[in-house]
Length: 350
Image 1 (cartoon, helix red, strand yellow):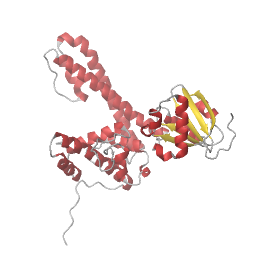
Image 2 (tube, helix red, strand yellow):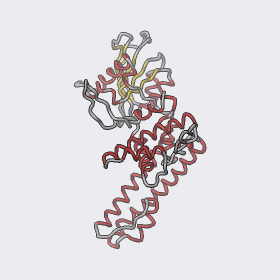
Image 3 (cartoon, helix red, strand yellow):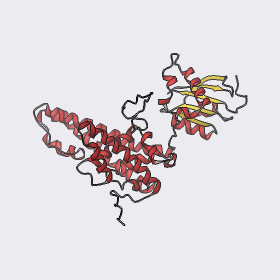
Image 4 (cartoon, helix red, strand yellow):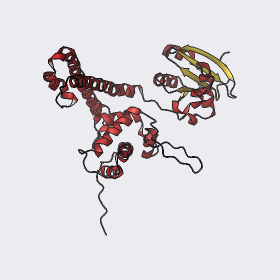
């Protein structure tokens, strides 16, 4: 069947995988006009869906950023569904690529807001964020190797000197036991190379702040927020105007408890962990600094320390609460351009 019917309120569902994309087109009454599949590449997608504009529904995933940009440029209304909200697909007893495409189309046809649509960042922002992600992978690889070297030496009854990760390859080399020098020296050399690569990416991040994202300096007014957290925050959020109030950033990043109220029952639950996991981790790291011994005095620190009183569990909750407050504060500074005041001046008595 050809796509020659009226395109008013037509909805196209796409179930995307690495090799093939299955599609299902619904007319304005919800009847299936066409189903099929095509290769998951830009040429095939562009050629197949040129022409009439549809509401296109896809699920967020590896291919959704470039696919959503391509379809938007072609004139379609693109809805990128939050995977957490597409429960009908995950729980279906007849789950396959063809029916998934139809389910997406039907959900998008009813009300796109039910899918909690995701807004993908621009191609430029995605490329810049890739630098931060690459740095994170290098740091993780270095940490893994450092832990291996320390563990191997400790298993021989020896210990390497305490030092930070940046100087480990220089300090550890002279303390390797002779019996494992051949085995561990290549790892120490690799750690040194990783450290150099991390340093190079840090320099690239500094350039991005200076040239492309000067607003990151507004966020760096807050102690514990350096160029890494500020850039990751700006590149992940994208447009600060997408939130009506700064308080909406907390739920967006999964830093608020889940809710499951029913009647008089309102159980206490853990945070939702929705949104970007890496940015959430960075904000938690920033919260640890705020509450740590190096954190300067501020209203946020005082509030967090008060929350942390009461034991280990209370401290964990306080860290998450401070991370949420930090996310809200950064958004506020970004939107207003205000000068950050760590301590509010008490009102003057009349």
